[in-house]
Image 1 (cartoon, rainbow, N blue to C red):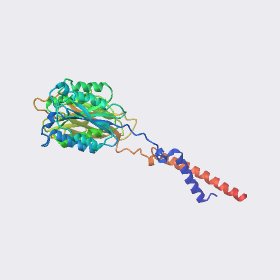
Image 2: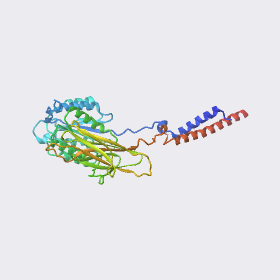
Image 3: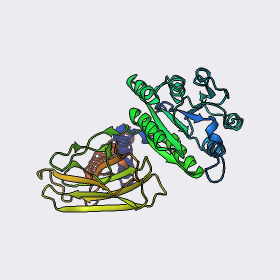
Image 4: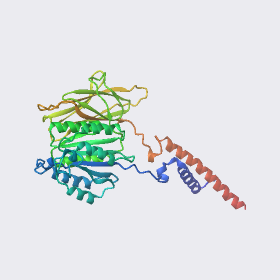
Length: 420
């Protein structure tokens, strides 16, 4: 007979042999080398024109606020980001337009960051000359070329371009080159003309525009944009919502951008399968002066108009965005049940002071995620061995057979040895 010790040893050896043959995940056997993602490139383009002397940001000059913000940002740049700094209007104090419109230079090259060197370079800046935004963007696009990682310019200025080239046309030309360069713009205490110009630059390249009135707001926004360069998710997809659910676009999982005029409602459609949960979040950005006391509505309804879930959030003018989010689970996973069309309504109660343009509409960012409904059983198996417990049973059966064979072989060897 097979002894208990022999059988136990056989079972253990058999199970280990099965696991070693590849039923465990590859990572459990050996760590395979992974290729690091391509390094993202970011260049901060800073306005150092004479108007940056104005003392209207938390009691200090715009230039001082920008320097302090840069110090904080440089301390928190994510590992692996190649960062550079370009200035405009930093060197020529004269009145010659032709010379002033060439006044842009790379203060710190795009590459691995030496924080001390970059901070020292920024500390020497003094408000000086013109505001050649167009030429600075053209040069910055060349600074940041090459590589397979994401590319992003962050333009920080307090005024319109003072040269002959329309910087919005420059941004459109950059976008047409197909180099996937995003330009985000930040306006320091901007007037309406500056806001319009900076909004146009950002929109042309799929970037964002933000009005900045406080130093901490400038710091947090630049940090956010630098961090965004490391995101591996696909860039937002432009879309256009419908006036009703009937003519709304049908969207899948992802992030979408749109524009919505003041107090407008836009509609979008999503198909939710049985056993899924729809998670949706929307942010509406006030990229121009708006009246205080506004709100955003995100609502999910059926095709017949029955409300499923809603969220509405208000703002007071202290932030540049207001967001709302909802979750709608559809239980009872059953492949035979047809997907349900859910209509998403995005509304806002923004209003503007006299003289502020209501077009183009306010920027919208809509994020959609379809995940397993919380009341459904998990697909995660023990130690990643597969879906459900059937594979565990298979492992046990194979191990038992291997153990029995090992035991019989061991007994045969013992008997053979005794005969000899």
